[in-house]
Image (tube, rainbow, N blue to C red; front, side):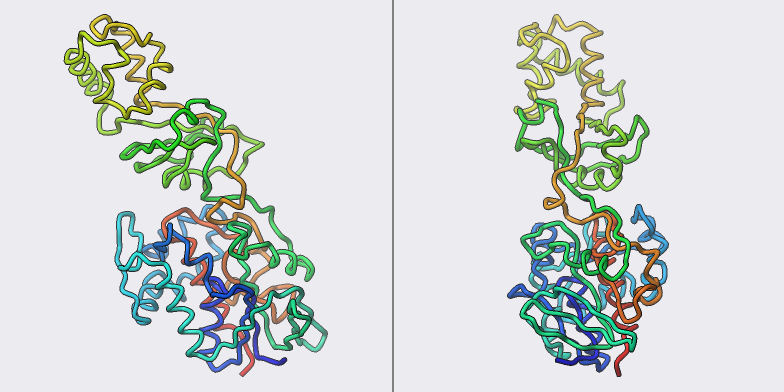
Length: 410
């Protein structure tokens, strides 16, 4: 089989890259073994799909903890406003929520994946339901992609858009890393990002399923503050999860070398003086009750036994007998609830993969390999990942756009 270009992987980056390249008049073959294109895309954001973040280029770059400068050219060529215009032009109405996060108005990730699939089909992309196993090149500059069925696709260019290692059930099996490595590329160590975190603290298990809202989470690396934000989180049987925790995990890149911990401000709207006044009012209200039965206005039922234990105040103490020092210890606990961390959950549970093809070996203006002419990369297979909030999908859209518009063959 011959084509102008072959795109390997029908996820967010691959489907858009193939559709845009075909829209330029190229004969494009898209290799994707899944029955439906955009399988991982369809489950992102709990099925809602945080399409992008409605921010400017500077803010976008600042949301990438690694080599954000690599994306400066790509984000200027195809930025967040371009993404919004693309999908609205495809008939998908969008809305912007807290934190400038952009979602389809329908709250259906399928609408985004279906729009891309339709665009690819209308532009003439040939979808081959097979997995790429190898990429071969020769001195004449011809590229050949070998498919799992044994056939070869001869082309002028190949784009690796195979994603990372997260959610392997969607097809992210690391094939792209292997093929890139076989062609001489450096693969930076892969680790989970935007991932739940494990804790050895028994009270996390005791509170599993209990969620916190409107709390402030602080994350520390060897006692240095590395992340602080307001939002929601969740206790689980292994530790902690939820939006705040996923965001914090993106800043934790040296487990094994550094010690990480979390601190939760359960009452961020109250300073220490106001919190003490609040405690005095509650203790006066429940003055004849035992301490463990006087915290219902301060914390959820699942958390009360843990607060009693960690405060050091015996649960059967009469509330009117709690000393000033004990009250101060409780206030300190409410403002700095501790969570020890032992590591991230497995990479298969991560939203994105940190690590991948070294960006130093890729031309940021074209996404073409500096080592292998005719070889391109887009999306999560690159060593690029960002914080939560739509930034990672924007990396996929921007790199796919640049690659699609850099391919030759016509």
